[in-house]
Image (cartoon, rainbow, N blue to C red; front, top):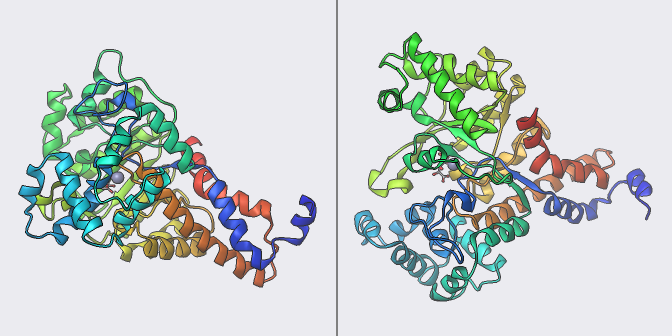
Length: 436
Ligand code: RAT
Ligand code: ZN
């Protein structure tokens, strides 16, 4: 049938699932939040490179299997292993333990486990192997740059937004090194600075060490110094947005140096440089400190505070993702009130198929296609393969249902409309948000 006839007739309801899944599968992704780095930031392994033990680009089977989501799971499956004993092992010994306990002795049904299975399969490796030895050999033969190309291609991702923590000494040193870091345009930067707002007493002495005259109260002179600090890092990193993660206790407006820095230095710096501000709210760090990166917990966000910030700064583009399931509805409602607020992603503990489905369905019903349904939060390059595969499947399912409802109501859902929606939900809305 000619295209124009398709447009006139729309897709038959029984063909919608297939058409949507094709469009969602083909649409390229701009991943709005990851912890990934290209090889230019150093990498501990790979053919043809000098291994950098503190390199920031993580990839390979040992990193995949020791993802912190899986560390939390193995310590439940094997409670006889204390966190201290677990972390005393080498990376590959940790991976061997996780493989044995979660993939050999048990069925890997959790989302993080299934992710490893999907990832290995997509790379042409057999996830049913009893040992990781063969997979390790395969990864050791790959070059980091070649693996980046392969994974982006297979995952259908063209842009991978980094998270560049200005308080991380290792990363900071790389940016400040003679000549800086060579940039890969597929990996835009994000200036991240949680301690400025969350822990001013810890941030202030660091800033002073770096030559910025700030005091404990974040008085007027300090605000100027923070503005200068942010301006210099924005100049150095050329970020596409600024970001921070906040605890459930965060309140705005409220007294205190953190909020003063937010309202008087961070938002003005973002607005001066035309950058959106991303808030990731609801994490309680170190609920079980022995678990290290796997030990963070969750709390309910005070959405009125987020709304107040959007109201006070109507010109500031604000992106928000909230960790608690209980907050997803209020976030969608807040976004209906403030067009400068864009909900994004199904973050961390919400990044499971059942909660992605519930959240995405609700957002579509309340906001139409004016949000960013997902980000990967990948820390290990190859995780892009499963995170996007799993999320695309849920997005396609929800979109199909919505189109079926629309068709039943009398609307012609055309192939062009399906393609347009898939493209904007996976990439276009991010591009508009970051490039306007
Ligand atoms: O999802 C995660 O891996 C978390 O550890 C955090 O990175 C969180 O996404 C964050 O950016 O703070
Ligand atoms: Zn993250």
